[in-house]
Image 1 (cartoon, rainbow over the protein chains, first blue to last red):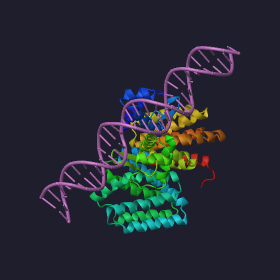
Image 2: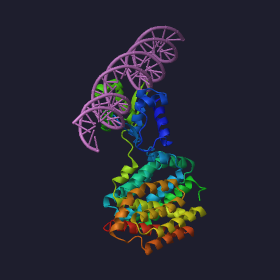
Image 3: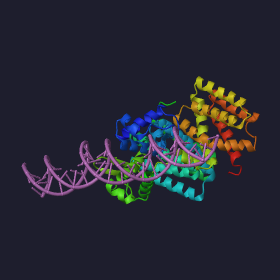
Image 4: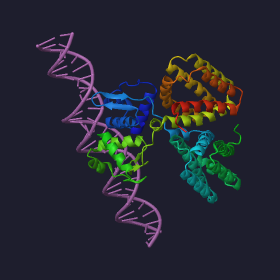
Amino acid sequence: MADQAATLLLDRIRSGEWALGERLPGETTLGPQLGVGRSTVREAIRQLAGLGVLASRQGAGVFVAALDVREDWDAVLRRSDVVDVVEARIAIETEAAGLAARRRTPADLRAIRRALAERAERRTAPEEHVDADTAFHRSIVAAAHNPILTDLFDGFTPRVRQAMLEMLRIRRAFGGDADQQAHARLAEAVAARDEAGAAEASRAHLLALREGMAPSSP
Amino acid sequence: MADQAATLLLDRIRSGEWALGERLPGETTLGPQLGVGRSTVREAIRQLAGLGVLASRQGAGVFVAALDVREDWDAVLRRSDVVDVVEARIAIETEAAGLAARRRTPADLRAIRRALAERAERRTAPEEHVDADTAFHRSIVAAAHNPILTDLFDGFTPRVRQAMLEMLRIRRAFGGDADQQAHARLAEAVAARDEAGAAEASRAHLLALREGMAPSSP
DNA sequence: TAACACAACTCCGCAGACAAGTAGAGAAGA
DNA sequence: TCTTCTCTACTTGTCTGCGGAGTTGTGTTA
């Protein structure tokens, strides 16, 4: 019921019933309006205050601090098309591959080669293979030494993982020798500091991934 | 005091006192521990529940739903280096430019050309120029018809805006005729459905932007 | 006109009571 | 001995009343 009251309140805020910074009716007034007691109203207000929508000042009242909840990044991804997510991944990873070729340290290179070897071993169980593949790609992105690109990559992978598992079950296209060699080429391009080559290798692989997910996509 | 209790509780969760999914002590037990009454504990729990850290089930208890608050995307960008943000923008926009060249509709093209003309007009006041420039770039990204790329772009721009304004004050490199012509080339590449050309034009311009911000960066 | 006192209102926190729900202990039966 | 059922103790959910602390607007006074 407190959750319900909070939702109701948020809807009224979203509808523009109160302007930004405006004062809401008092707890005692709001209670009967929402059909709940005072403590329930207080809990609802606390909840919205935690989300930054409301701010209460003792003695003064409750004020609108934001007109809506800052949308959660995970929520955006969850309700997005997987193909769109993969396209964003293409953007991130091709750029990251190029930067990685330029900035990789010997330690990065060791990590990349270790992840590549790991990926070659784990090719039986779908879950393990997908995770090993993700770990390899992550080692490339990490070598770009750009925390934002890394964060973005980490945000994308959970959403893509499920789709990759399903794809792997339907068609065995990935996980074959050709696929592994494509990854090896990417690793070698990074090792050779070949920016264009790394970007191209990354892009080619991910485009294939996108096609596998939505063959009809233009 | 409720906020204080919530912070205290969050700290204890962060410290690993309770595992993920574990049940917390009851409200009546937690109250004396935190030095507050039951209703105050309830409000603190509500607050954390709104953030997704706790989840309470009537009759069963309160359970840990997440070990920490989901980090806000804005906060990540705020504490990041601008150069890193620009690099992420390069990744997003070059990919978006290529996609835009493929998927643009006549309406997209009209919007792009309108934004380009607007950009050509507003070249006196720094704020107006930066905003017009951003609007033009956004019209390109929007033409890619990928909501994730658009959201990412919208997330980046506020962070970059400030830095661009400062840069514009120091050096007048941007806003000149050459700069405007570079943008026109990008628009025309999208119009001509030249994917590689659009991507390259976008990349070249943004690389120059990055150099302007951090001349020493490799 | 300006400074002050005050009263009404607000949120804050506490305590107690009851309702609604859960989960485990214990009894009953097979 | 195992299974099933019932019941009790405990938990959260909600309401109400109370006093404390803070703010704000009004009226008074110098």
